[in-house]
Structures are given as C-alpha cells and as structure tokens.
Length: 97
Image 1 (cartoon, rainbow, N blue to C red):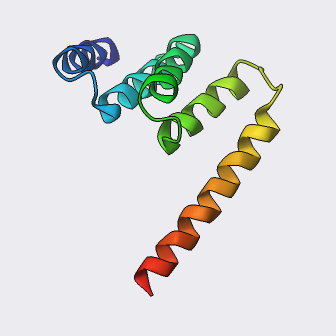
Image 2 (cartoon, helix red, strand yellow):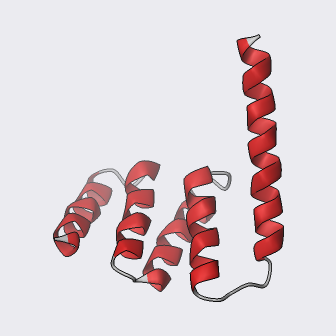
C-alpha cells in the first residue's frame, strides 16, 4: 500500500515540482517504508532547492540523521530548531497582541 501511495506522490511532484508539501510527503512515505536514505534525500532536496527553513524538512532530516546514527551535528541542528521555534512563537505572540 505504501508503494502505491508513494507512486501517486511522485506523480503529483511531476505535476507540481514546487509544491513543498508533496516533497515533504515523499520523505514521510520513504520513512514509513524504512527507506531512511531516500527520506533524507527528499528532505534535503526541500532544504537545498525550495526552502532552507522549512520546519517539516528540518525535523525530517534530523530524524533521519538520528536513525542513521549520523550524530555529528545533531545537537547543533536541534538547538537551531529550538531557537527557530522560539522565534516563531515570539513573532506569533506579537502579531496576535
């Protein structure tokens, strides 16, 4: 079933290669199939070609690094995500005030 949904996601990407949600979903599908390297490639693609600050791709890439035991830099990535999240929450509070 997961292979079938992955096929439809890939077709969707062919139709709209700029859709970041499709690209992130491809990473998610690869993770569900235990294709960690494929997921890492999909998330890295989002970050390098579409949006270097995409939270879904950043978290997906971090998860892949942990699962692949690529722990060099994981703490730094986690700290970056934590600061980014705190900044976004701060901006949201100012806008809603």
